[in-house]
Image (tube, rainbow, N blue to C red; front, side):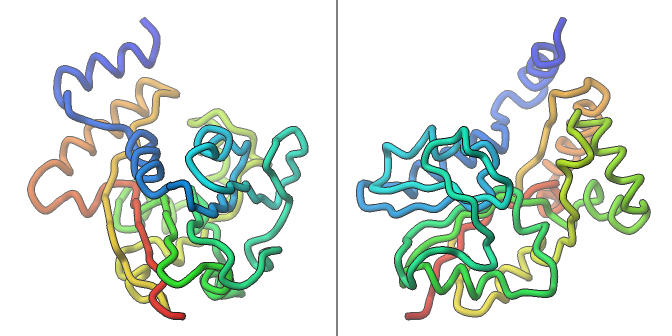
Length: 229
């Protein structure tokens, strides 16, 4: 029996209403898009989201610092210096990007510059209050952490960017100047890569179903709205 089939059977038995973080993210994204949407997906990776949902918007473009000439609707660019006019965009998405924001630049100033008044930022990221995120951050040296991530999730070490977790709590998002939090969801990451990893994450997910413990799930989905002109 494959990892996915085994994992799905476990979910069906113990939490049949569970929805994976990507399912929830795509649902929220689709609800935010409209025929008038000017949408930029920052840190787009392989540009999968733009390719999947671009027809639901007026205009969609993926941006990343890693060149990806094989993708359509893609531009190589840095969030620190977005090649866009002021107030030209009404939706920006950041999937597992903000955890890599360092303290050397105010990224949300640049995001706010290009975003229209009442424009929206959709963010999916790690939750620093989750022990799954917090404990490795404080206990493991950077090199060892990258090796473990590479081993567990089967990614190359050179594809792992440094994580600073400067914006990875609800309180931090609530404190961003010029933005207000419209929606927040605490999500569990259940990974199919290895059965033992899935089982450990699933056990923690079930623990966080206890009243008051959802705030310690591993992922945050945040919708911010620009609140200044």
